Image 1 (cartoon, rainbow, N blue to C red):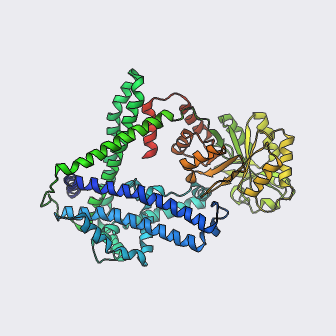
Image 2 (image 1 turned 135 degrees about the horizontal axis):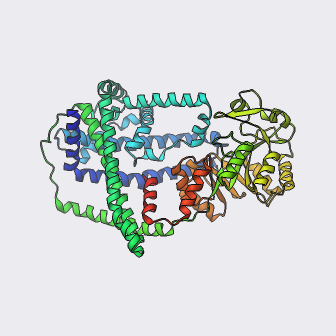
Image 3 (image 1 turned 90 degrees about the vertical axis):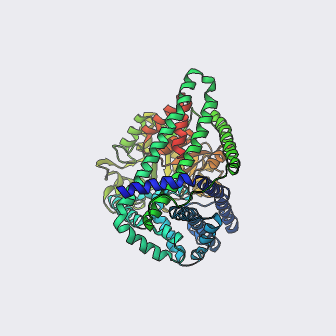
Amino acid sequence: MHKEGQVMRQAVYNIYMYRIDYIRVFALIKLFQFLLIVPMTAIVFKLMLRVTGYTHITEQNIQSFMVHPFVISMIILLIMLLLLFIYYEMGFLFLMAFYQQRGIRYRYLDIWQQLNRKVISFFSIQAILLFIYIALLWPLASVIFPLTLTQILSIPHFFTDEIMSSLFGRLLYAVVVIVLIIVGIRSILALPIFAIQPKISLFRSLIQSWRLSKQGLFKILGLLAMIVAVHLLVMLGITLISSLPLYILERLIPSTALVTAAITLAFLEIVFVVLFSLLQAMFSQVLVAFTYNTPLGKSRFTPKFRRRRNKPLLFIVLFVFIALSVINIISLEKSVYAPETKIIAHRGYTEGNVENTISGLVSAASAGADLIEADIQQTVDGEFVVFHDRTLRRLTGKNGVIANMTLGELKTLTIHANGFNDKISSLDDFIEIAKALNVSLLIELKVHGKETEDVLPKLVEKLKAYKVLDKYYVQSSDPQMMSQLKKLAPNLRVGIVYALNIGPMDDTVDFISLEEAWVTDQLIAEMKQQKIDLFVWTLNNDQSLHDFIRKNVNGVITDLPDVALKLRKKQNQREYFLQRILNLLQFMF
């Protein structure tokens, strides 16, 4: 542990001595990221839509969209830009650490030119290796470098939810994740090797990383974990200390709470950005020290800083602080703390029940859900059964296709999940129980392609017969069917389900159900302006539930209606500004 302690002290010493260098570099990186990379990505997507003639991209047309030659070329361009940005960002930090640890004087221009010499690698087969390398380090990078572009990438939950729905899927997922983590960690030194050594290829860098990490892997991981832990403790300490004035003032002098909260939040936002930047710097110092076995000790020269050159930087920091404070005053004042978001139980309440069953319906109603979502399909005899999958395999363990079976046959079957058993229900059974419980349904029509021609009139007549046409919601992933349904029953609330969407939404329906990965603040504002309700699915953690309830979307579809209801109730109560700040910081970082 003696050497590890020396590495840590050397890293802290170098970052402190070259603090102005790091401030300038991180400022330029973030400015380039937010003013160029992110807007350019949005522009490229809009250009793809215009050239291909698509109005928007959904799960129905994404396959044909992705095979378009122009789209393929633009996606390759975006991948190249992403790889280049990560290469320059991290390469700059690795080279700075390398020169600092050896006491070698450097200029930004020299580092830039050295990185430029390897740009040719991005136009060769090595680009594929770079992409795989970044993908392998993606989970680790999102923890180490929270402000890089890797943070905007995420796997939509509907992919993982489907995989995790079976034992085989969970085992397969676990094996794949473990393999990727092992390969990613063993390859962690490849990028510093590639960036620092002028003539080495990425392939040779990966080989060297595997060789070097074989002996010192646990030491490296231990140090990285310790760095993260220290940063978290520092963040917690600064948050607690800086929050004390607000804690006191909003209780003693409530009139000062808003301004104090805005200033406190602005200060913490800047501090958190600085700390995350320092985290990147620390990791670069540690990885370079282990990769090149850097001789420990103080640098052979001390950088000289001219105080007059730092004045513009101080003015910029002050300007950013004031601007953030003003923005925070506006946002905190306008924040919604009495949200009207509907809590929608996904396939009933599946905690302790099988999905889409009467028992799940009863439990969801008892929990207090505003709406209960139920999946229906048409059977071979033209009736409606409450069931999600096209086949019986997952819930019964038997072969069989819903579209080829009668309702009577299906109702005799026992379904099971998570140790619980139940029976398949008809839509009639569901509606009768729902009416008795005085709860409304969100009915999702699963289209399998074998529906009768009068499937929509039949559904409308059934809802009319039960006198719930103006109380229930009906949605489907088939936009054309939902447009027809809206014409058949103008009073019925009709919606379209999107697993993904890029571009404008269909404005002929009453609501949109969209997977959370594709919901942006801009989209929420557009939906409110068009007076189209927005339901977000499927939210199953406190963070996402709190975030979308705070944004007052029209509905959240969740497997945890009890948790969502508690969060909504908490936000309906008058919160102190300090609690609002802590909530915002939690979701920002």
